[in-house]
Length: 198
Image 1 (cartoon, helix red, strand yellow):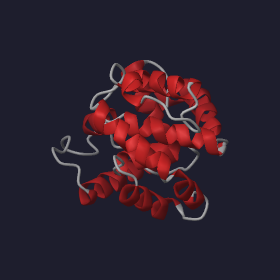
Image 2 (cartoon, helix red, strand yellow):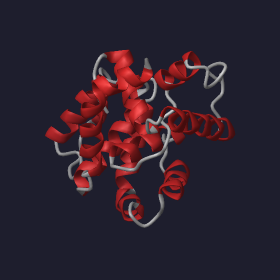
Image 3 (cartoon, one colour):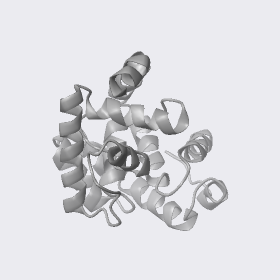
Image 4 (cartoon, helix red, strand yellow):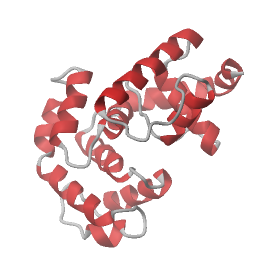
């Protein structure tokens, strides 16, 4: 069943991952990081609407009234506005480290140095700019991993140790069914929403 579902969406999934792999423009990388800062416990589509508004107002270069944009699009908008401002102040350094560090070091760097970023958000950001083989362990992934009996239950606390353990189990499952973890992520997302998104 998994293989059949994958083959039905394989071309669309590969196209999306190829689009991610080409994203290196500094401005676009900045907005992808903004997006991943907004998504925790919020609707991804509404968060992307907020990003489109930030692009329209040129947040990359200009001062923007963030609360006005975020308060109807994402939860915890005050905290997330602060995280966006701090990230923007440090973005030159963040961008410099992309390409310098290998992917696991880069993920660790983001978690330690970007307020509002955990392993899930860092993995999401890196996947969206073309890095592969990093698990984005959000609710839709975890629920599907339980259904597939890769894990017993959705953990109540996803600390660093648990994150890496589940990531390894997810990777091994991908190897077993011969579908990359990144492709499975987009496939699982399509199970929940009916489409391949971000």
